[in-house]
Length: 527
Image (cartoon, rainbow, N blue to C red; front, side):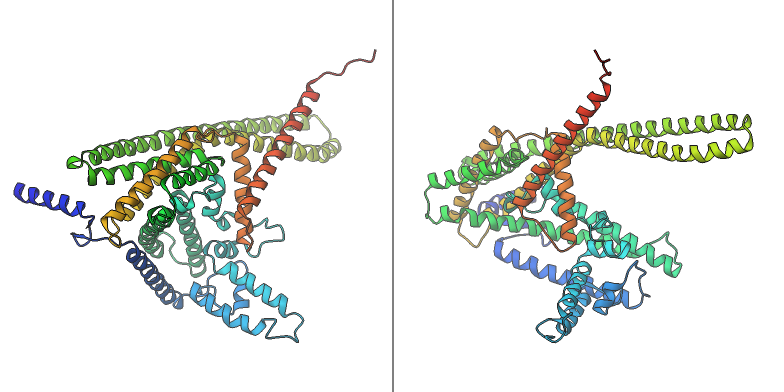
């Protein structure tokens, strides 16, 4: 066994130096090719989609119609409430030909029919908006009955963390992808419950839900792999002008620095820059170190630094998780204590009224009860509003800790993703070893500039004002609601709305403080 270990170690060093990768599934050393991996991912996605479509079609054909609050959109498309995404798409194209304004010039209502058909397709073709429609029906003009099911987690977290400028480097954040999966699972559970209620099935065991989780696991792995390859291709395109000699090293470095300065202007820009910069630089150091230093000493040094950073990231996630849990639990206790005080106060009032009622005649009681009922309702409304305000304040107090936890998760996610991204870029057998080395050098330049600018940036902190967090959360919800209704906002419009929300919140806070100060100031007698 020791002999085999020595031989395998020697083979591993030789293959690794040649730029080969270890294929875990086939247990052999292979030459990795970035473009081929992308093609394989696209093919695997199509296969998985077809497989899910077949399973869904087979399952749905044997089921009774699913109960929904409003089936108008399904009727417009002439499909069953159990229809698959493929069936809905096919039905849309079929019905669209019948009502398209160009096909029906003599029908004055064709434009409105076509528009309504488009709204039906837009809603039913998206898993989240379809689940919200099945549960709540059509949204009203203000979109007030769109629930959390209609929220797009990717859009929400993109607005919260302002990640659009760094998306080419890190792709879709894991936290957004995971939230999306959780919401889809919740939607599946809800739909399954509706079907079980309809057919009086036993709700204690849901085989379809377990199958869905197994599929989502396979799908999530493929999604992460696609994210890594896409980021690798983006990096490859980013450094191409430097690799082919179109621009000098100085020009490339200056371009990277300018891009970093632009990213650093965002709320969490500095954090993104340091996380991305450190990950890119350490991966490049490791690859170059193994290729150029004696016995790969510099590569091993970089590898140790990377492992130390990974351990630090994991510890930080655990610590911030504990802090967030404690903050949430304390907020819950505070709200519960206020609710209990209100409940005790109501109980005392009821007891007092019962005693007073014994000493009054019947007519007095009737008149007093009618008058007091109105006062009680008004008082209860005020107490409920006060309790809601306290709950909101307690939640606000815990927001910074929750943001810190979310960012700790993001930081670990970015490091892990860029580790695999750089490995794919540096071992791409589509180019010779000399070009792979040049890629690593270029990536190291990007990493160094990003890290240096990020360290000096004012946004290199998770300490963000509660007002800014609230404004971002409000606009994030607004944007996801708009998207659920077939609309969207540009990044510039989003930032403008965030600034407007912050200004309005600050003005409202100042007005509230002024009113409270005025109420607290005693009236002075006239001189």
